[in-house]
Image 1 (cartoon, rainbow, N blue to C red):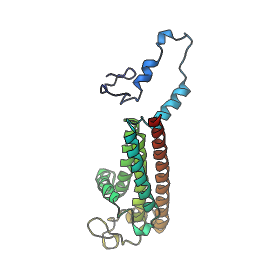
Image 2 (tube, rainbow, N blue to C red):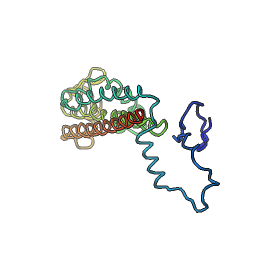
Image 3 (tube, rainbow, N blue to C red):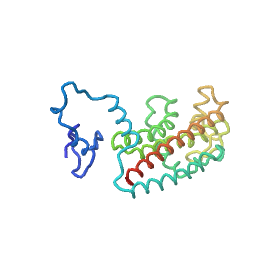
Image 4 (cartoon, rainbow, N blue to C red):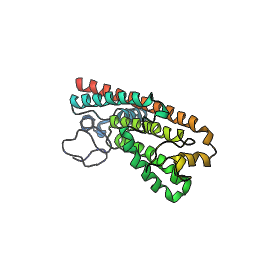
Length: 243
């Protein structure tokens, strides 16, 4: 069916618009504009609050099984988060996790993507790419499909990438971390180790441990914030299914 608000074509069984997120049942209950008083004007503040609420909470789930499934996923992510956040940077726990294998292709693709901008951005591009991908995924889920829970998980993934990067930064001077291809920073040509090159070129090499700690701490805060958001979404959706 075509959305009466934005005109987007939706499947016949949809209860809300895939494009603008409006709920069709609520539109049908609105009075005809011809029946409204001549001095009536919409309340932009209320509309803005409603829009923010829809974005932050997302569209409601189809049934309680979906909510329980999300709750179980969230529980698993919380346990995983504790393992990653409380591990030392030197242990490279994030770099040895399953999610590192997901981050790595985006990292390597980033080197190719940013190559036209010169050597510095070629090295930095790997880190930028693995940070940008979760943000793009989260923005798409939040704005396009109104999946607030999925967007929260993507923000968690964004934060986890900082934990994934932290051991790499921490290794800039030592050069002992195994790199792609089996090399290490200490036995590779200058520039092969991204963060050795980046911090040397910017004069920050002596601060590699501090910068790694900042990355780990900032990523941990993002992960906690994302988990709180996801938990709030699940809680609200659970209440909606029980109503």
